[in-house]
Length: 82
Figure 1 (tube, rainbow, N blue to C red):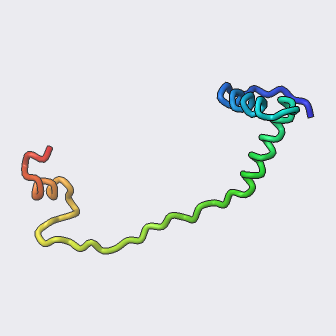
Figure 2 (cartoon, helix red, strand yellow):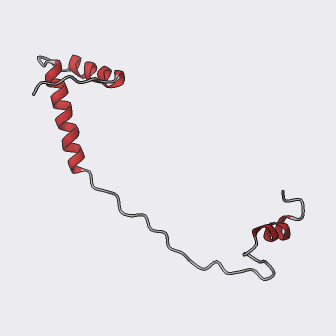
Figure 3 (cartoon, rainbow, N blue to C red):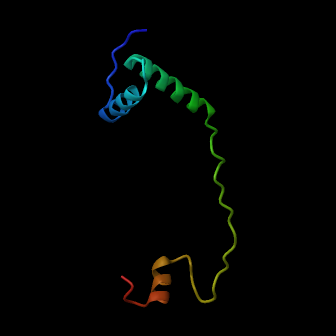
């Protein structure tokens, strides 16, 4: 298949470096080889396990009201908490 492709500068630099290391290969060969490797690697990637958070009771300290944050901050840090 023949197509026009815009390659970003950083990718082109890496492909050029790989081309210099590959004796007897054309730029087309290097691009196709790199694409094949990338597609194969993508196929072999396993999705990570779902992250789970386990909750636990922290308890309520006597004298603190957790329903009103402003009041709670005032109790803990004083009237100048703002």
